Amino acid sequence: MSVTPRQRGGLPGDTELRHACAVFSLDPTEARLLHHRSNAVYLLPREHVVVRLAPATPLRHERAVTAIAVTRWLAADSAPIALAPMPGDQPVVVADAIVTFWPWRPTTPPPGPADLAAPLRHLHHLPPPPFDVPRYQPLRRLREALSLDSNRPVPMLTDDDHAWLHEQISHALDAFTTTDFPLGTGLVHADAHSENLVRDGEDWVLIDWDQACIGPRELDLVASLPDHFHTPEAERTAFRNAYGHDPTQWSEWRILRDITELHSLGSYIRLAPDKPAAAQELNIRLRSLRSGDRSIRWTAVS
Image 1 (cartoon, rainbow, N blue to C red):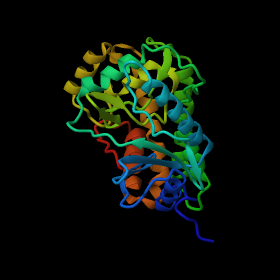
Image 2: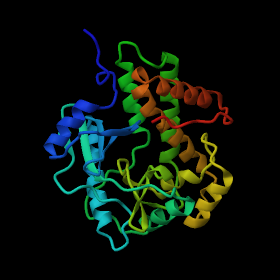
Image 3: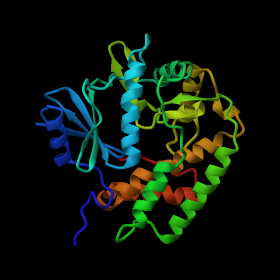
Image 4: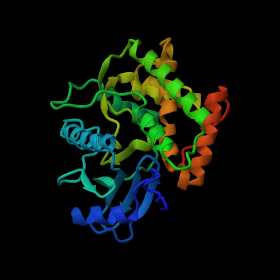
């Protein structure tokens, strides 16, 4: 029996998009794919709506429910820092997909470091949400992806790579659970970078709250840490200055960098069988991590 891309762990596609739009009474005609990494993200140009489709797993359902609740709460704040979802009962579950719907907003002119720092600073001073939010579980998505890969007829990773990654996960979790974080814990976005900003009126607000959780606030400052994307030091410094805190002055900052870089492998492990660019980037990232060569530049594949 043949194995479909979805069974190999790929993302939902056109069929799931059409079914979800029918449930939500939207027109998917002329839908345009915007991103294809951890989610399949489509723009409905006739509706001015963005549709996010994720694999139908318990983790992704939990994240979608959290994203809807958190953004509705934040958007009602006197100084909104999140884009509210479209009105209606969300998320929508169809076949192999967990689907959420969002208003389209522009991203031009491009945001600068201070534009990302401002909503994060506001977020980190808010009281806890009046509803339950999952606690941060480091590397849960990577562990899920490794389990998926192990069950493929032809895994993308070697047995040695699997063993090495499980060892790194164990070391990272041990370090995380014994670390005290200077900024304390609270509601965090947990995937804060400039690609997740859109302009809502005169304000820049955050989108893509799928990883929102209760966790150490330093998680939202990862964009200011030296990493494999080789972000210019001037941009990292501008972000730190705008936020008002430099996490690199904390002796344990590499714990979050390492967790974040390991976490990034999860999407590429899922997509690798059916997306050559993802398979190539997975190989680059894994080899650079295993060799410790930080001169190797990573590139986001959408």
